[in-house]
Image 1: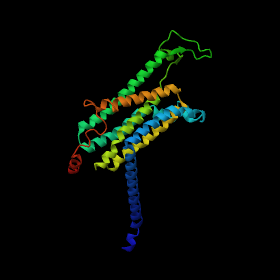
Image 2: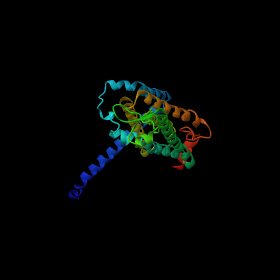
Image 3: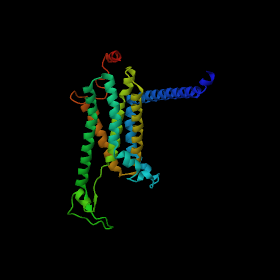
Image 4: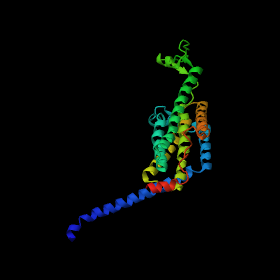
Length: 287
């Protein structure tokens, strides 16, 4: 029997090591999710974050005199610009939508309330599409068509941007930075939506590893959006185009999260209806 038990020893050691690694990963996930939940849940820190975004957009372009103009981020067609910035809203909806879905449903178990909270993402998508069309309209109204030659010959017969580009000419107009708008808007939404996780944890509601992981993924995505926003304002677009784009994003956030979402007939603010009295006891009974 002693000889037969020897082959099992390496497997038992491997299982023990796997158990320790799993416990370590769980501990790290719990620790960092608690820390970031606390940070995002402090109102004064969220206000300081808004000032941080404003500082990036207003003072970030000054760094263009100290950076390498041939860096990869100075190219509109760089990997991050194509894979992330242009589809920033899609990435935000995937990660933030998963977080909202889990938080609302685990806290209440109500499907209709979960759908109502997810409607904020639909509103955000509508604002993004509306802003895109508005920016294109502004560029059309303020622009003109010309030939890409050293003299820059005007082509007055093509007053529309699409027709101008279709004929192989160039269009020059006031191009509000859609990338700056989108990244700023996504950052503001993610901070607003994930801030409820601190109160969620303090209520003692179910907070398993899947929920904590999706929360941490949102934190990582938020950090990425901040980094790409900084790269955008340093390397790309003209100064006023970036400031106007960020200002429009802030206005959209303010009108919704500080205005319309406070009304009864709206998708509601993040956390609305989740932390009612007795909710914790009902969740524990269901479990």
